[in-house]
Amino acid sequence: MLSNRHLIATSLVIGCGALLGACGPTNENQPAVVISGTTMGTYYRVSMVGLDKSREPELRQQIEAQLKEDDHELSTYKNDSVLSRFNQYQGTDPQPISNGMADAIITSLRIGHKTDNEMDITVGPLVNLWGFGPTKEPVKMPTQQQIDAARAEIGLQHLKVIQQVNGDFLQKDMPNMYVDLSTVGEGYATDHLARLVEGNGISNYLVSVGGAVVSRGHNPEGKPWQVAIQKPTDKENAVEAIVDLQGMGISTSGSYRNYYELDGKRLSHIIDPATGRPITHKLVSATVIAPTALEADGWDTGLMVLGTQKALALAEKEHLAVYLITKEPNGFKITMTPQFKAYLRKADKSR
Ligand code: ADP
Ligand code: MG
Image (cartoon, rainbow, N blue to C red; front, side):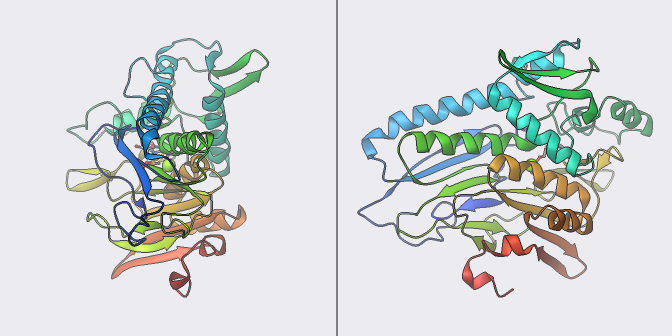
């Protein structure tokens, strides 16, 4: 997420050896160099095996520059970001964007269509109305009239990416549209960090930004990196399952960390574009493994909006690796697709 609402550890998925220490002691011969910090209202962490310690400052500088560039493109919290300027622009001419941003929007639009518009990057006016964007939380429940007015400003069909030899462009046919890429921001930044690390000749790494992770190769112990899926509680670091990503990207979206209460109701930051209101069903978290973290980050939100049954049906149809946690009267129920099971650590496969 690109939210600066509160700086919380939204990483529902966290790296081995990082917060959990799930991989055991590090090998003295090949220690990991770990560079971490904050970005986009959340935490990032880059663990690299095989990097000469003397190169750490240079890598930190490259990583921070890359994160700054991504934030400058996608942030809706910065008035001068590429996306904010597009949102402020009250016209319908194509506006130039980077090739990476074009790809992220194309992926988001594709996932949007596949989820029956439940994942909708034009949902910004509703996100802001409910106080999950740069605007403050409302003190009163939004009225149906306000919700309808915001809903009239959204719709994936009004947004188009144009890719030409002279560059990539973004075009809207309603001047007052407000695009919100927060839902794919963490995945976007994670993929970029993975590419940056590989570009420096490092093939054993684990990178994460918020709830999105990519890992490749092995950890300092010479074993595959393992990533933990947290239990859906407010407590940090309670492990539900451990996966070995084998070079893939993973992302979790959950409704139990980013919320506030109004009139005694818990309001989640994930909005159902069909009703214009925060989701209310019992699916509390959706985790997706996909070839890129961006793709995983796009799907997880769409699946959260769909709810357990529809999310599972879509995951099966699209052959997605999906892990869902649903609230039941006496605890939580786990459901996953066979594609996800293949990534589970052996001890967890018997579930
Ligand atoms: P997080 O890591 O915070 O759980 P997500 O990837 O689930 O992030 O994205 C949540 C963010 O996406 C919200 O804060 C909001 O800005 C935006 N959003 C909310 N509902 C939708 C939706 N239906 N489609 C696309 N984006 C959404
Ligand atoms: Mg997401």
